[in-house]
Amino acid sequence: MVETQTTTFTEAREGAAAYLRERLANKAPVTDEDFEVPIIDISPSFSTSQTERQHVADQIRKACTTSGFFYITNHGIPLSAREGILKQAERFMHELSPAQKEALHTKKSKLGLGWEPSEYTSIAGDVETKEVFNFSYEAAMDKTGGDGKYVNLDGSTTNGNMWPAEQDLPGFHDAVKAYYSEVLDLARHLFRLFALSLGLEETYFDTMTTHPGGIARLLYYPPTRTPPSPAGPSNPTPSSSSEEEKIGLGAHSDYECFTLLLSSATPGLEILKPSGHWHIASPPPNAFIVNVADFLMRWTNGLYKSTVHRVVNRGGEARYSVPFFFSVNYDTLVETLPTCLMEGEQSKWKPIRAGEYILERLNATTKDGKGFFGNGDVVEFKRTY
Image (cartoon, rainbow, N blue to C red; front, side):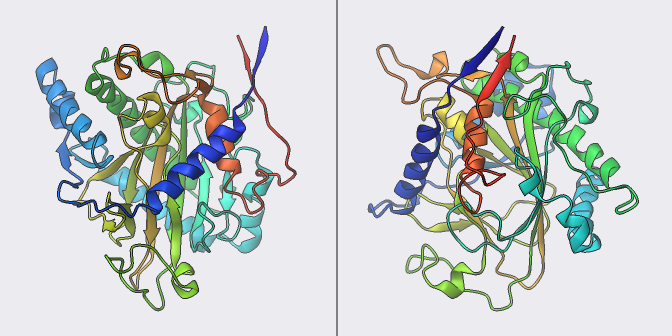
C-alpha cells in the first residue's frame, strides 16, 4: 500500500519565516539577565543509575526551555575523530579543484546534498561567505548497521550522497565515516535524555531513530579582511551592505530535532538573546554545542525553544565547523507529544512527516526558492508500508 501524505508546504515555509521575522524584530524592553548557555557534563548520563541520568536530563530541560542552547562535555567522542573531521573540512575546501567540486554541486541533488558554493543558497537573504559540503545518513556509517528501511527526505530509497573520488581526496570518506558513526551514537544517546527531560519513557524515541535523518555539513568560513562593527545594543543586526557581505551564515533556526555542533577554535557562532542582541558563543575546550531545532519545538508545542542564531567570522583566520542535524526517521509522522499538552489545550501545529517538513525548509533556501533542481517541482513524500 502506498500512501501520499500531502505536505503543508505553505505552513512549513511561511510559519518558519514568520517566526524568524518575529524574533529579529523584537523591540520589547526585555533584559538578558537570565540568559545563559550552560555547560552540562553528561558523563553521569552513561551511568546505570536512573537518578544520575535523570539529573542530566533535568539540566537539559532547563536549557531547552530558556536559551535553547547548551554545551556538553565528557561526551565520549574521541579526539582523533573530532580532529579528523575538521581536517577533512579543510582538505575538501582547499585540495579539490573547482571542476572536482562542480561535479558534486548540490544543484544535481533533490536532497540538498553535495557541494554548496556560497552564492547558491541563502537562509535569510544575506550575501553569505560560507562554503559547504553536505552529506546524510548511510547504513554503512551506522554502527548498528541500520534496519534496512532508510528513506530520504522525499521518500526515495537510493543513496543520495555524492562523495569525492578516492583518488581526488584519499582517506576522506573513511575519516568522515569514522566521525559520523560516533556522533550518530551520541545523538541517539542524547535523544534518550531528551525523552527523560520531557517526562517520557527513556526509550520513547528509540523506534523512531532506527534509520534516522542525520544531515551533516562541512563548513568553511573564510577570514574577514576588514572586521565589521561588533554586535551590541546599538548594532543588534547587520545594517550596511559592507557588513552583510561578511555574514558567514544568515540568521536562522535549525530545522530538525536538535543539532550537535563541532567547530574549530575560531569563534563565529552568535545566538540571538531575548533582547534582540547577539551572544557570541565560546564553548569550552573539547565540548559540543547542542541546540534545539524547529522540529523539537514543534513536537513539544513550543515548550522547548528553537533559538535564532547566525555565523559571523570576525577574525583573521578561517573557521571550520561540522554541524550534525539529527532527526527521527524521515517517514515518522510527528504530532505534539502527550506530555506537552495540558488538558483541553490545542496543538499549535498540524501533524507532518519529518522528511516533508525538512525538505520544504531546505528548498526555501536555494537561490530562486524553487528547490534544489530550480524547476519549481513540488516533491511529494510517499511512504510504503
